Amino acid sequence: MKSVLVDFLVGGGIKPTLIVRYNHLGNNNGMNLSAPQTFRSKEISKSNMVDDIVSSNVILYGPGEHPDHVVVIKYVPYVGDSKRAMDENTSKIFMGGKNTIVLHNTCEDSLLTTPIVLDLVLLAELSTRI
Image (cartoon, rainbow, N blue to C red; front, side, top):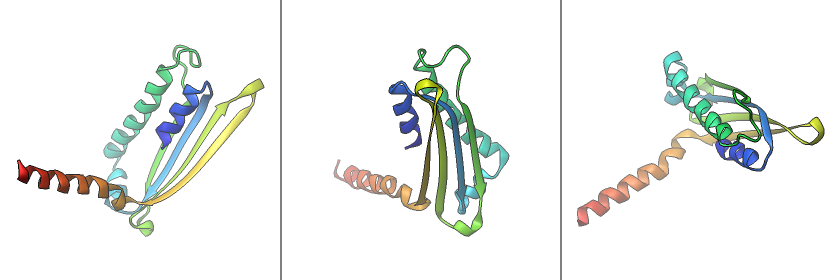
């Protein structure tokens, strides 16, 4: 959802200047991402996504120009399996104005994997027919 929004803005000629992602998780995923080396890997992958979108539009962004991009992931045991994400996207608009879109999303982290598990079960069942 986040990358789609940035891609939509850039594709529409709107120039994101600030992208801030704050997540807190309480399950093993959150605990694992609290380790600096694991977090760094996640931060790089999220930053690369923004860099790819920015580099696709040389009209909005000149050489070496890119939005400020910050990713914060915290382990908060109390929230359990919930993944809570707060995202802020600020863009330049007409006549030097600014527009900020703020998203708040809460979902159950383990339920996000359910479609993958179902696909694996269906694939395993299909392979028994071959």
